[in-house]
Structures are given as structure tokens and as C-alpha cells.
Image 1 (cartoon, rainbow, N blue to C red):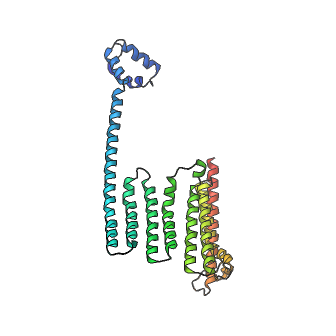
Image 2: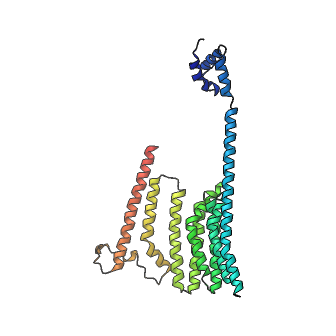
Image 3: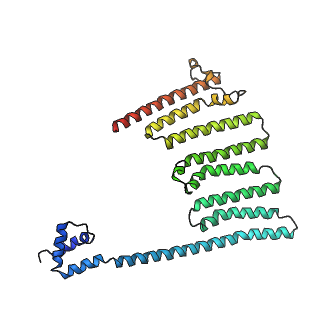
Length: 332
């Protein structure tokens, strides 16, 4: 033989995968004419039936394991549901036995629904467990609050419900929205959708507090104007971070300027909406008095601080923008 079998065996993997050079292929095929052993080995390597069978067996084993896990999970979920139903049944029997209305029964029922949504739903949901757990537990919590409010003859339901939904939305709204399929043109606005949803529930909470507390006009002016001012600041920061196509350094500069202006001008903006307010702003600026704590006029001291914050944020922000622009221009 012109070539040793060990040399041919080293070349066989690339030959079988058809990635070897034409010269190597010619050498191997010439060797096949002289060596039946290497030719048979090549046929065995081309025959992927063994690998296919292994993959089939692997998939069957995994499928059986998944079915076993699902059956076990469903069994645990059903047993847990039965256990949670025991207090409901006991409360129903006691209510009927003592001749009371079913008020406590509904409170216990909604309490068990809340517990089940936190325990059973994650076990039973096949996909998007966190999303379904949050949605079911929120709905159960609202039902529980509604039942308790009716039983106690209270008027606090809307405040409690809106505050719970607002708090849960702040944490879980981005997670839930990420699990919902959207059109590509709509999905890129998810941060703004989340911000809008949270803002709506914040306003609902403020309105519920105002109506229940019978507050005067100053409450409505202060709460709505201050909340809107904060939301606008968050909106601007979100737009800069998510939608402005520029470098991170330039974005940092823009955000520094926005935050500095937002802090420094806060009281002046609030005074626009509340003319009768005494929220001292930049109108009391007097740098000649400095920043000593010995200043007797707090309005002057605060105005000097606000002005300093604005100046520093402008200087730092502009510096970052210049650095980012220069760095990007050099890279280009």
C-alpha cells in the first residue's frame, strides 16, 4: 500500500464530512481500492443510523421524564387545592350551623384563592409561570379586599385596590409585558407603555385618596402637579436611554443635565401650579451670602443650593457630551 492505514483513518472524518481537499479525497479513494478495512470503516462512519437511534432514545427518555414531572406536579397541585378547600368547607358549615350570613365564608374563600394563586398556579402553569402567578394573585387580592370592604361596610376599597395594583405594576408590569407577543413596531415602545400604565394607576390612587379624604383644592394642585412633574422627568430619561441613538457617554451627559435642571427648577415649577404656595425657588438667589449654615434666610440658602446644582450639572453634562462626541469622531 502506498499510504499507511493510520494516516487514512486520520483523514476519514474530513472525507466523510466532505470538507477535505481534492488531493486528500483522491488519496483516500485510491487507498480504498487496496484496503477493504478502511473502506468498510468509511461506510460505518457515513451510516448515522446509530446516532439517529441514540437521539430517538434520548428524546423518548426526556419525554417520559417530562411527562412524569408533569403528572407529579399536577398531583401536588390537586392535593394542595384540596387542602386549601378544607378551611372553606369548614367555614361554610360553621356559618350555616350558627345561622350567620356567608360573609366570613367569602372572606375565607377569597383568602384561599389568594393562597392558591401563589402556590398552585406556579405548579399548574406550563409556561410563563411568573406572569400567570402575578395576574392570578393580583386578581385574588383585589377580590379579598373587595370582600373585606363589603363585610366591614367600609369605603376604602378603591384606595386599597389602586395602591396594590400600582405597587405590583411598578415591579411586575415590565415582566408581564415582556411575555406578551406584540408587533415589532409596537414592542419597541414597551418602556413607554409600562410608564403609561403605571402613571394611570398613580393618578387613580391620587384621585381615590382625594375623594375619600375630602381634601381641598391645594391637595389636588400639589399632588397632580408634582406627580406630573416627576412622570415627565422619568419620561424624558426613558426616551434618552432607550430611543436616542448615540454613545453612552453622550447619554450620560444629557441625563446629567436633565436631572440637574429637574432638581433645581422643581420648586419654581410647583409654584406655577400653586400660586398660593410658599415653595421657595430660584427667585431668592443671592450668591453674595454664600452657603454658610449661618444664613438666617432658608429661602436664600436653598436657592443658592439649587443654582449650584444646575450649574454643576450643566458643566458636567456638557463636558460628557463633548467627550462622547470627540471619542466617537476619533473612532470614525
